[in-house]
Image (cartoon, rainbow, N blue to C red; front, top):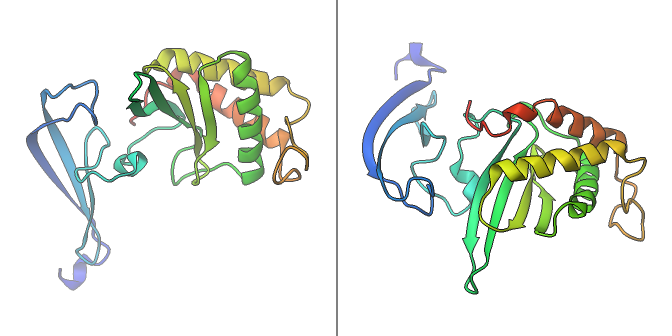
Length: 210
């Protein structure tokens, strides 16, 4: 590039036909789809990752979330991150419960810790199909793993009910040195603020992409 192109970011849009694997796009089931692909090029001329207009990467990686273009989502949202069909016939579904807009906001770690404790305890009052609820390292959300086929509307209802439970708590469950590996590292106020912020956008949870 010439000297006048310093800091230039070029968008190359590529449209092409491809067969979408059912494992990656379960709603497509192998039908031919046309995607518009953005390939961003930095000022040094090196290509960043390419993405389709549905927010997935053109070059698949092993970790599901690495295949999601985090610049194209609109948090908060709840989406199906993965589905596993186990040998004995059981199905596990992992949900991305995203509280904060990636790379724009995040939860502080004491709030993350306290949401984890509070949600994990309260959600089991409403469902016996919960396997796990754990935080993302980026501090923008959590993963909820449940037994059963994907059901986003029902899961949104479950998350809503559980977050409302968190607002009624007067203490973080198991926030002590006997029941927790870092019992002092909690914030009920932070957890409840996160719950209120998520609930304020309840009508938008099923809309993942901006």
